[in-house]
Amino acid sequence: MGEAPVGTPSFEMTWSSTTSSGYCSQEDSDSELEQYFTARTSLVRRPRRDQDEPVEWETPDLSQAEIEQKIKEYNGQINSNLFMSLNKDGSYTGFIKVQLKLVRPVSVPSSKKPSTLQDARRGLGRSTAVKRRTSFYLPKDAVKHLHVLSRTRAREVIEALLRKFLVVDDPRKFALFERAERHGQVYLRKLSDDEQPLRLRLLAGPSEKALSFVLKENDSGEVNWDAFSLPELHNFLRILQREEEEHLRQIVQKYSHCRQKIQEALHACPLG
Image 1 (tube, rainbow, N blue to C red):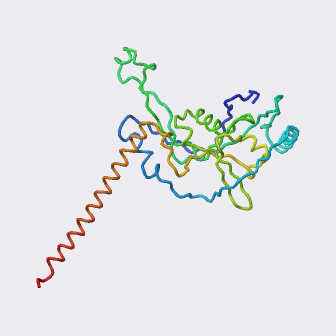
Image 2: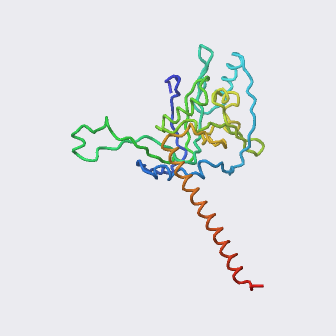
């Protein structure tokens, strides 16, 4: 790990699960996104299933001397070679571990080979390959160690993780959380884009119970339509239209049935 981190963090990959990924190639069709996106699961906020509770962490400003002392204390507590190092310019480098807890599949680019030998002879090869998207589930509870700078922001960590997996989904669909266990309770807080994970790691120390990082879907309750691609938006409109038509059909059927019962009761009543 002698390679110094730059703007984009370098990576050391560690998988904590051997669960197979579920792959599914998706052609350009009306059902391209429906397999993984529905109006109900993607547009409606679902209740939380875990017991994580939001909590605020104090992040005091440290002097250069305090940073140096913190780094010495940190390095003295770890049982690996994932040390923090102080740089001449006052910044520092180190490692953070991120656990991926993604419920929905991610999308990666794929290329469609020429369908016939004639297409290949015409030059419809790699340079003009038809672009499509392949979706798959990342292994459950996968873990990555990232080598980052003290000034690396949470948003840059997310973007770097997605690049590593060649994920083409908008980074705004994901969020980096910090997790802590205190007094038998689990607390979770979403990091803002400009927060610095390595700084938080230094302040909390190396204990994973005191602080760990988790990448999850950014389910904020409000839909960020700008984060979706044009095919996704068009697909959502088709899904919504079908759901609306189905609801209208059910309403018409309900009132028609009610009207029929009332008319039957009227005919059954004796005159006068």
